[in-house]
Image (cartoon, rainbow, N blue to C red; front, side, top):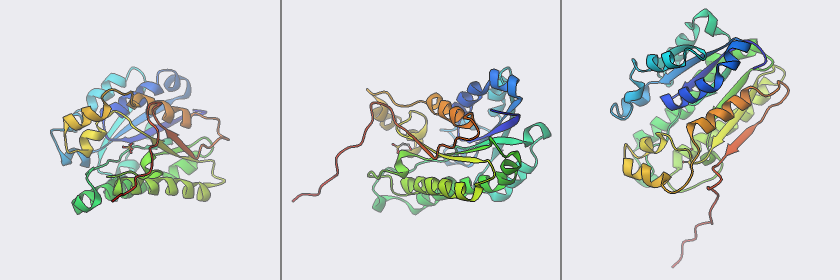
Length: 273
Ligand code: 8X3
């Protein structure tokens, strides 16, 4: 990591935290004094408590315990949509975790795979509030810290292929990820000279709880999407996060779009008589 500091992963689930936590240690943790802040975006748990048993406010402690032999861990549970909660949580970080060197903005979700004209407005608001407002809340709260860290600091904003490539049912989800891309690029302009890197990390098909969330808990739909192919995993994306944040300080990857080898674009749709 090029120096001491903490990694703050604003994630949704145990998979992203576990994969990144494991990737961070033990070598990085012990050699470079690295610490890991797992921040759970709890409002998603409220969308469907049954679906998100794994981010019950008590549960992160079990994962923190499991990772503790590899990396020092501090857990937070916060609602990224609530700017006061975000800034208070960051201000209240314990001293050893305060010096954040890498911010991973990984909290986000897709809802409602139906066509736009069939979607509840509330679902659009939830995606905007989480994927856009939540991401800017966390970024704003941490910019002073990242700038103070300076050379080698990183912001990794998790975008999506949906931010670049349109497809049916992507409506506000894809548009919110287009925001993530442009916000990342614009941040780079303002942060020039500070040493802080910014990347839009844009995964394609990844087999996590993503599709269960998108379909409101439809396990059959989720299984059908991933059946018979080889999707990306949470570990694959954690590997990219680690790579980005450990690059030599003079390198900034602006956008890193990652698809499974077995995924590619398709033909344009044509409406015919
Ligand atoms: C996740 C990938 O293909 O659902 O952002 O847009 S996809």
